[in-house]
Image (tube, rainbow, N blue to C red):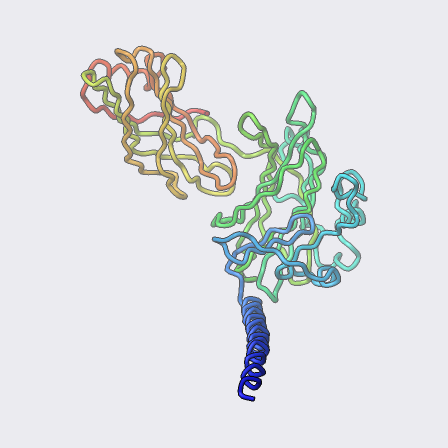
Length: 423
């Protein structure tokens, strides 16, 4: 009897263990699901730590963390259509409308956005006529007779202020009638850079559209943290460029929009402006650069000190430049070494005080020359050359005189101011 009872009890042990294991597994899974739900709800209530949001062709991009990878989520299509502001964590693409190659077909004319088909030649819908005066459609900058003859095209965009999120929204819709910057293909690869003035803290740009003179960008940029009372003090600066793979990008023109007098309280405002030629100063106003040179004949080295720059011009109407100096060493017209200084923010009179030592590969300085390029640092795009200076035996003016002095007086540090010329 004792043996039978022991056998029955030993058979029940695995069953009891299995039941307790099942209950433990269910409890663990439930606890994990509850923790995940709590984290998700706490994240949704947080305000995202970014300053602007870029919306590209109906794709809303919201980085949850500026230092981590961008995360995306999907929202209901109806919510995207009904909400005028940019929703949180949304990524909407109608995948059913793709063709066999995976591209989205264009149903509008010649690359024009759908919302502009009903706007042209009128700029506004019936409900928006009262919100904008006809005088606001005129260009903020008068054109000279030469610029009127040379048509650079028209830029279409819209402005809006979201009072709920305290966000300023700019939508770059399209450009029409751009000139051809590529003489061989008689077309351009346009893109647009936009800066909010006068602080130049917000700099954004669109993607490049290949081989078109009527690019339809339809890209939205949302800037958070700008009070509505401050909008009147700002201005928008658009620079229209054509991408060049092998050299500096070609500048087609620019558009400057002072926001003073523009009322955004009544809703979205559709606008257009004629693109004008960029306002660049003459070569006589490139500024000056103070350079110190010393040639060590015993060690066959050249010491170059970039000291100061003064009277540097504005790179464009967007304000002061962020200059830095690139130093290139040439031997027999071949570059053999290059250095550069740090960037000095928003100043026409920069103080660098940076020293560079170059090894000279030959005896003497007859075939050696030094090129100084003063550039304006532009985040996210190619830097523009403000001015250029060349020192060497074949250089003219103060460049040749300075070079002759360091050759005649080796081991002596000699400093001179030099006028910059066009780069």
